[in-house]
Image (tube, rainbow, N blue to C red; front, side, top):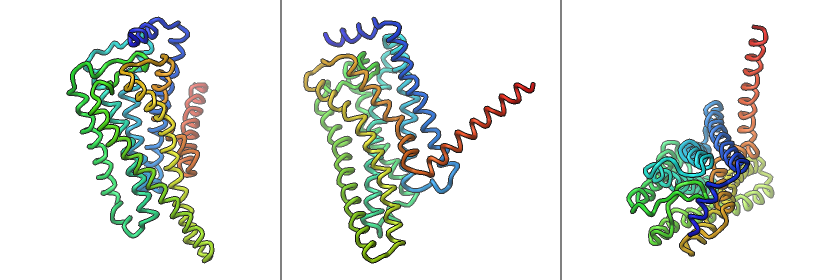
Length: 320
C-alpha cells in the first residue's frame, strides 16, 4: 500500500535529509510567526495604517499566526522523529485547524475583494457598508462560517482523519466522504474564488475608465485619489496571487489523490505541498513590504530599533 511506503520512506531517511527537512520547516515556522507579528506591530505603531483594508489584512495575519503556532510545530516534530508521536486526538485537531485556517483565509480574501468593489465601483454605499465595526462583524462572520464548515471533521468516523506521512501532517481524507468534500470545495473554495475574480475584474475596469476620464478633464485631485485606490487594490491582489500560487498545486494534488482513492505520487511532491501550505502563512509580510512604503517604513523602523538595542546591550556587556 502506498501509505505504508510513504511511512517507511519518512522513517528511514538519512540523517542529512532529516536535518535539512526539519530545519527548512522550522525556519519557515519562525519567519511566519515573526513576520505576521511584525505586521500587527506595524499597524499598532502607525495610526495611518489602521484602515479598513488593513483590518482585513490583520485578520489574515491572525490566521497565519494561528497556523504557525498550532499546526507547523507538529509537522516539524514529525519530520524530526520520522513519525507522528502525538496521538489520535491531537491528529484530529490538527486536521480541523488546517481546514479552518485555510477556509477562513479564502473567505477573508473574498471579503477584501467585495470591500474593494464597493470602495471603487459603488462608492456611495462604501462608507455605510464598511465602517470599522461592520468590518469586524464581517471578519467574525467569515470565521464562524469556516468553523461551522470544519466541525464535521471532528465528528466523522476515525478513519477520515489520518497522519499523512508524505505531507508530515494530519489531514482530512477527501476521498473518505465525497459528498462533504464536494460541498466544501464548492462553498468554501470555488464560490469565494469566483467572488474574488469578478470583484477585482470590475474594480480594475472601473479604475481604468476613471483614469481616462479624469485625465481628459485634467482633474488631478480625483486622478490622484483614483491612482491611490488602484495601488491599494494591487497590493491586495498580490496577496491573493501569492495565496493562489501556494495553494493551487495543493488542490491539484489533492484532487488527483481523491480521484485515485489513495496517494500515488512521490513523497517529495507531498512534502513540497506541505511547504507551500506553510509558505502561504509566511509570504504576506514580504508582499506588504514590497508594495506599501508605509509598511516598509515601519518594518525598517522595528528592524533598526532592534539592531540598536542589541548594539547597546553588546556595548554594555563589553564595558562591564
